[in-house]
Amino acid sequence: DQTGERVFQTQYLQKPQSSEDTVVKEDMIKEVDPTCINGWDINNNCINQLEVDTIYYSHDFPVKDKNRNDFLGSVNAYKIKKTLYIVDCLEERQDFVRSLNFVKNNEIIYPSCVQIIEAAANGNPLLNMLEGEVTNLRSYSPAGASKEERLSYATPYMTSGHVVFVRTDYDKVSNKWRLSKSLQNLKQRLLAMPNVQHDDICDAFSMLVNYVFNDIKYSVYGKAFNDYNIVE
Image 1: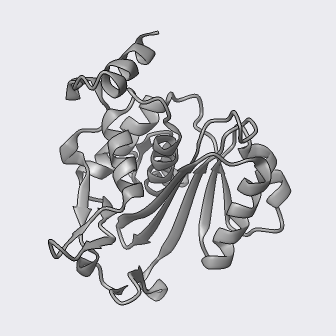
Image 2: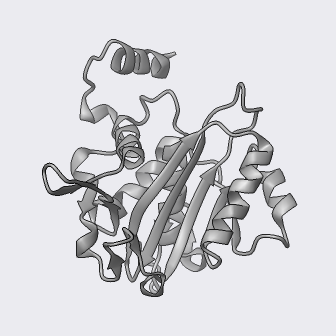
């Protein structure tokens, strides 16, 4: 198919792709050093939780067993006032039991965190099994929108600077902060979308951004309305 051919051309033959073919452009991805964020503990390289309005995890779970399945895509972020800071992500193969424990452990680390789970694949049985055991779980349905559409709905918040990637790795040689390897992977996946073989982490990212910024009270998927029914 056409998508498979684009992936082959870009990932295996190393032929550059035109930005016109991708959803996310380079200038949409904003990065910031942690020293620019109020409440960031440099010694422990983490945020003071008292400075955070909400801690989010967004999960796109696979459907098959770990020997054959797609990747789990998971993104971790802090919401401080009007800005969503992307601080970590995970892309790996997990079986059902490991995925179950992954969600439980997130709540142990951050008891008040909100975990968004796509109501598809292993997401539905996970939601059912964890109901009443893990608090602040949010079931999320893309309402029929394609993966590319979901990501395109997230791009205005990226362009406006309301979504920011945090450089959490410090390079002692250059004395500069840089994105962690996991966030570099997410960035490259986003810049190549839809020409990627594994898009699970991109789905988790778009689901997170759209959930956070599209208030359920005033929204249809991908459109946020204010009190005057004007699209913001």
